[in-house]
Image (tube, rainbow, N blue to C red; front, side, top):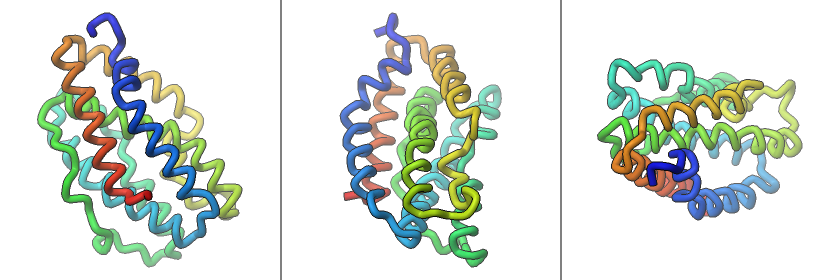
Length: 193
């Protein structure tokens, strides 16, 4: 297990969950309306906001900057504010009360793999949504274009960081379990059937 990079292991251990969620997402997004899109973003916000709080509280000082500009709750708030024409109230959005149990840095990094991977996939989702929703000047898509043109660069940096911090077989195993749990929770929370 130690000779294979953690990102490769994570991809292998979450492939079925990733493929199942991707398939349900494709079906859900086909023919989506502005109203359904807004609800979809609210569900994302309901997961991301408490997840970011949990991650922030679990990272040691030397890794605290890791989450920093990778936070996504603010971009979701921006999208939801735009879609609701300024009447967005984050206190009215239900929050996920079964966020993955992230006890260690290895747990956090495994969970972050799922969210950072979703950011990478967000570019594809944005293209689908732009064609269907015809929102003006790309407004309402901040979440699905979190890093703009730097998305691939940020993804490669994150994969490198995984390998620097999770070297042992035990650390890799914990990270893989956390990624699987994050996929399970996220899939249930988004309620995509």
